[in-house]
Image (cartoon, rainbow over all chains, first blue to last red; front, side, top):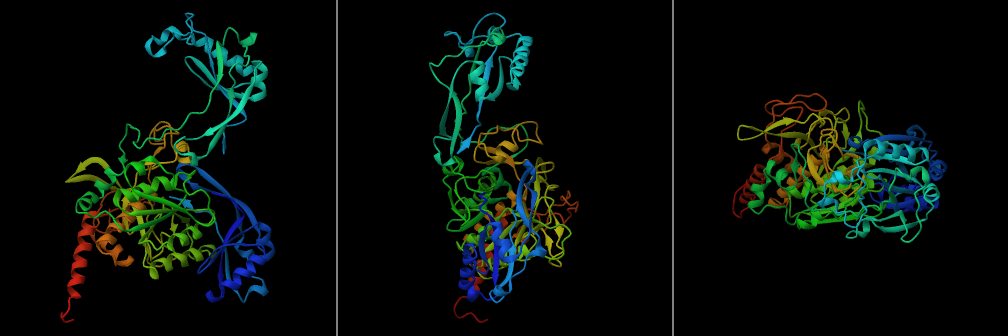
Length: 103
Length: 484
């Protein structure tokens, strides 16, 4: 899997305003990959930190236990995520994704 | 591009006890007694010790040679020679798998064994990496295991359906996973096996993890004429799932999830995935299958909308008219703390037993993480296949989920308008009861629906018969003039 920054899902307050959310995020250094019920984005850590106040710590988890395969990634402190005032009209929720376990 | 390393990997041949040289022009080792060329064991050990003292890393002391590696500079200095870097494809028949660089001896360049090694090393050669030749046929291993497609299809009673022409023809199945290597297994079986990328992924047909390539074979074992479209994940599994859903498949198979032990409220970072899964089921009418986990309390496998798949092991002993079936002690079963009343699994596919559920021989990209990680001996900690042969023996609910997804594809061929809820109910109504064993969580199997196995092991034949009779009943109800 390619590591190009931190991936996340942004939920608009109104799906009809997704285009506005798209623009706002791009202006803040986010790459928008998919627009749907949630908007899939990726961005460098500093963009997440600057825009949503996210604090990250490195975290390692086992993603495939049969071969003890580990993944290290930047895990967001969920309590640190906040939507800034100027985006609260557009964005309801922000989720920083984590790698899944393979069963 | 893969790099073998900046080191020279070598074999140092030790002179034989009797003086015969394996390098003599007439030394055809395959036709001569090997003892002619065998060195004294003590001399091989001395050669290894001397190489170590010079700074070489000794990896193996064999009967005829010492295996090792060394930094390029050390090799060139000790043997007063020169090597050069070369590049070649990992597999000539699959250039998309990448290239390998390595250090190679150069013909005609001087090479001298120095005096400390003269009596101990006859010759030493850098070893180029092998070319991977992946066979569509799996290797043989000496323990009970299942092969795809034959054993998996037979044990889940799909062969009856296949004979009746129910093969998943015209049904699209999507599968978000780690990648979908063009293994000859798929081509030789004539399967419709394609791959695409999630927007954040690269190289759909590269599968360095090995998981997707392997698990896809389970779908096609059950639904050999289905259109399988693999979606390679990048770093965002939610995005991969959404990408799969937008392909408008009839079925999505997901052999992954997030372990949420003791969690009673869904973490916020998983809510977009929850929404995407719910939308796929309720608004797109897609039968979404998720693996229940292997000792995990897996999400989204616990969502009420999905078909949650656990594990049953089929032994190689007979019991009644079939093989002995037992709840897999590797597969999860649990009651969700997040969705009240939601018990997992709904039904089961075939899964091996502890410690590693090494059970189903599956195709993988040669030399990838699974091929290497499970290789070697002994079983059941390892699968006893080579680390680069493009085959590995594994399972988990990762394998069970696509098996059930394949059965869903069969049902959608029989009844194209079948809803996800109806598909799940048909599978549960037709499943084979499993009454012995315990799940990974220790829940017991029992007669009837039970905690360990849900409704039991899927039965493709019975499920298709039920779907067919349900379709006929629906058609009869819609006949003109019939009073309602």
